[in-house]
Length: 363
Image (cartoon, rainbow, N blue to C red; front, top):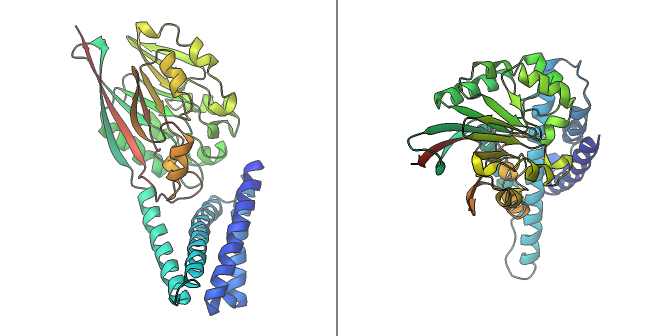
């Protein structure tokens, strides 16, 4: 309910700002039909989150799509209103006459086009490749790891989306698949209705599929969710480790479930004897991981803000909001995710699959 209240409150404020702006600049925005349509779209952002699980699937998806696109529209419309206000203030200090209606029209057309491009981009992930060499593994040993994060299966991203993901993963011929949290978006029922996890059973990875929980994975019966994931070839590590030869995989509970590094440190006692990989959904414990002797830190969560220019925020929130960086002997990689949350739009960096080529050089 806190999420619904937050999204509803933000949606109402942004909708109001956008409505006042368009009403000020366009005559048609002062008509009753426009007001009624606008009001319906604005209230759908809240109603969409309150629809019961027994609501017809088509209605659930349609409502989710409308809500997501609407939030993107009012977000950028509010930014346009702020820009317009700044330009108006500047025009009062100079002889320049601000063409308000033209600015509003060009801005609205740009916003719609930009969102359309972002919606296309959200469903066209790219492949990012990273090469890592370590003296903790035998010379000539190559382990290909596919890193996924933030899949967000739910009302919009369902069976077809998961099938495409499984196909893309198999094309990489991975030895090991790691998922850095947020496989679930909202409710388990949405995933089960579509049997959206079944394509994961077709992923071929000799060393298995291993995951850590993200904050969304706790939203609906996390214990049952773990069992459902296991039945579909996905093994979850919750503050625990698993050993595969000289590889050690450790998965942490999400930072939202305590936010400390005690388990990270406790689970790292034997890190010197293995090539130790740590899965941590939110990239908030990179430095403690380096201090505890982990070799590879894998995270997601940030989406690089999802909507431009929100990466200006995530770059300040996290030590590494995206990409790769070395912290002493630790290599940290943060993915911006394969899916999206809430809005079927990505105008920041494109969604991705990260392929890690891990090569040993130990003599």
